[in-house]
Length: 334
Image (tube, rainbow, N blue to C red; front, side, top):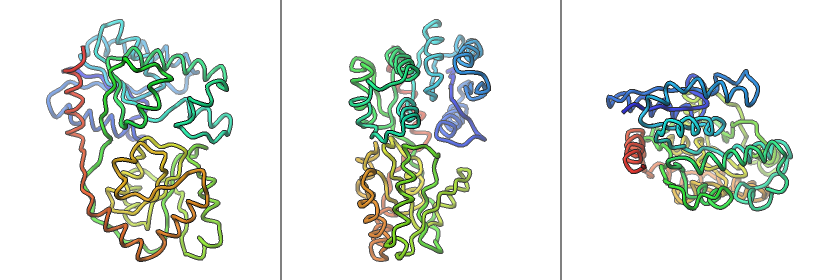
């Protein structure tokens, strides 16, 4: 096949879509497919709207000759969908986070849970947010299929975006083979992430500043480094903590599992069912709950028990499997 992958970022840039695009391209090329990768992020220097028009004309030749288009970027998905419709091409969009919710929380500081966002906040959208919502609704309704990584996100989006008649499919995120466990020198909880309000970092910082947590010897580490270094950092840390207001398929938690490192994670996550046997869940709006779970994991016996659970967990979903699932989807869509 001739496959076009449209992505917002690509290595050496760091992030989930970059890893996803590069690994799908690698597997498909190895299988003898002709793969073209087009990166929307290259046009970020241009104003919003203008960069979309430029990207549209940039991808036209690749769209015209492709058999299958996989887009991983919400900001450019509408542009790629329009081009695919002109040339009658099969296109799927693999959803990531929720761009609209991220923009809203950054603008307003309203710490609304993702699962409540469309139910409670649509009337408070700004003009820009209303436009984005309308464009995303059109895009999602005009794809050959939507690929969700979790049922949780799919169920949040179905009603507000009118997707009950759309072809909705699940392809779980990447879960790699376990790495050898490392060793920690202090009770450091890795919480490094993008500095966005919905990540709930300020509340987590306040938890680690309480007297009880300080007395336990636990400290919060918010340093961010490139992914390969980050894996090594997690492997040799005490634990990982993610207490965001809604994380669809948090890569940091998947990395923690890969490294055999105990973790605390928001219960507002699409991974809940997949990881419930090895996770310590917290209510992201309840600092007392987060504090109690940090203190629980700071106990040596509890920690050993949790580490044994994670080290014995053996679910794997690798890039070859994921690429095959996308190929099967191509065969299933008209």
